Length: 589
Image 1 (tube, helix red, strand yellow):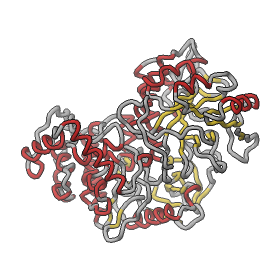
Image 2 (image 1 turned 45 degrees about the horizontal axis):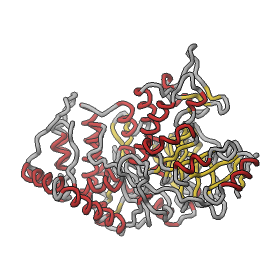
Image 3 (image 1 turned 45 degrees about the vertical axis):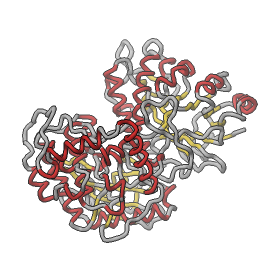
Image 4 (image 1 turned 90 degrees about the horizontal axis):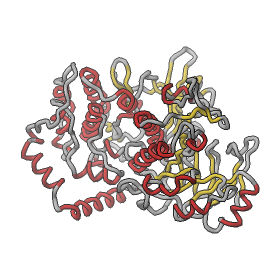
């Protein structure tokens, strides 16, 4: 993606030419040295640069990455962890992440899977031989270059001979790819923990599914610690290899040398998936597996499972993890501590995922047009998914779900843009945005797959909720779109958000407020509801958990007179520009 307004032109003498992505820690840019060498420059978010604990972790990442060198890692070429805004440059590796490839192209087969597996074993060998444990091996931390994979991001790596840095209230790992010992004893992990993560990653690469994939972070943690992995569809010999890597006992997992020899047996050609692969012999042989399935899957019925789950929650609490910081399938280790709001299961949530709802009737701010320091007393803020969350507040992540941003139309496949009878793209002229074509289930699923990456990015940065925008597009284009189509996509997004531990907001769309529970919507963000006398319907449907945005003086006056004692109210300028920009306006009751 191209550089955004406000991005620096250069860092440390490297000219920035593109924005590669962003995460919980900062933004990654494509940079170029004076000699033309391309580098990936990670720049820490300004909000975290003054956080000494965060800065210490960044120094640790730089030091760890400098110690590791090998054909399947990306070497550090330059860094300044003590700069006002710390940064690090690694050799640029052209290629998509494994997560992107599997999501867009499907699972790997044959030689592609074999090269991935052997390359990752070699990368782990290079990491372990300098006394490091990566601790966050996952699809988004693997770049797929033409000559093999590259393992990146040593932000939470652990020096075995040093005391681990304690990151208060932050997750050390990514639940679906963590080992049991990372939950139970995070300071005692060894290289065997990375072998467990490798097993999960290879299953994902081969099938597109995670072997541990609960409907909430806690349920995923329960599965990792107590249940056998889901290996349906994993063909031999990978099935047996993965089963050994995913043994709950670190000592029973294969060493890297043995694992390399096992993985060399992977076929160079495509092999059909196995519906029920045989169990491997040895430490994970038939007797052991039979006992595991009986004692972990069927023991004691529902009551026993609930008690064990409570134990997992307690274990997570002991290690300093809060539910809002724990995100399935994300890197939240760089996120700020979440506010001390109660966790709850929303009445409208899909599945058992516990999410944290925003506090009711509190000062809040709407910053989707650009982030800036919240005013004193503000407790909730909504920001664009491209921005970092505000430290110590409840943060809502805004994504454009039904339309394409004016500068990102080309990011979508041409057939996913709504077109008129002449084949021309239909635009929301008020905002210059192309409308997405949600009319068929197949297209909605492809759109949802892209939106999943944004929801995952929100979780990775440490947001507590997501706000899909333009839910009401169907009301502006009734000759093309129907309410049921918008609802079908929203229900799909709600399920993904809850799986990531995020609450999800209904944005506007009073016409569909009666369906909020069946879709899994947790609270509401409503624009100009006082202006158009719609606030009462939202307040009733969402039990008062409504965040109001007014854009006119009349709307604010009405909101303050009628709703200021029960709902959260703010007035913003129509462009919601950041503080300091021309036209900025923020008022409240």
